[in-house]
Image 1 (cartoon, rainbow, N blue to C red):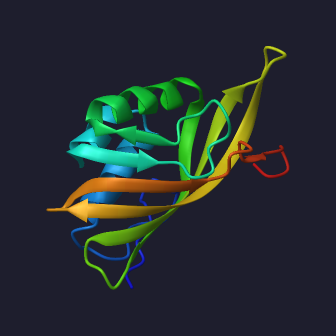
Image 2: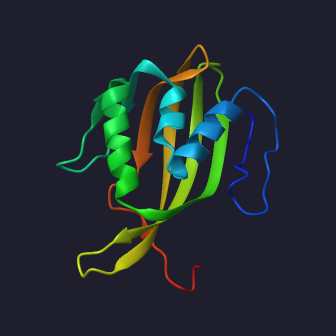
Length: 152
């Protein structure tokens, strides 16, 4: 098992150098607002699945165009996004990895102000020829934990 932590987390650098680093770089780029870098890491026929998506949210997205549109809407819904932790774990299958990810971001609230939320997820990622072919995201459909000033 390989454990790698994102350099975007303050004071922490990658623990290993391996082919998974491209996937990590793409995730960090996406968190920083670069959807195209993330899509470049995906196959043309990539599928994103969200098994716990609430009503009104997509459960399955197919292809880079559909995935890109969705991811752009995700980025537009929050600001001041930071990766708090990122771990990529290899499995016995070289074409499957598991990602543990925690992101903190500022979201608008109905009162016209904003709230900071920290959302953690685990994703099972399928790879084909070194690119993401499937991404099954087990995220918290309740929107994550609200971060208070004491947590900051």
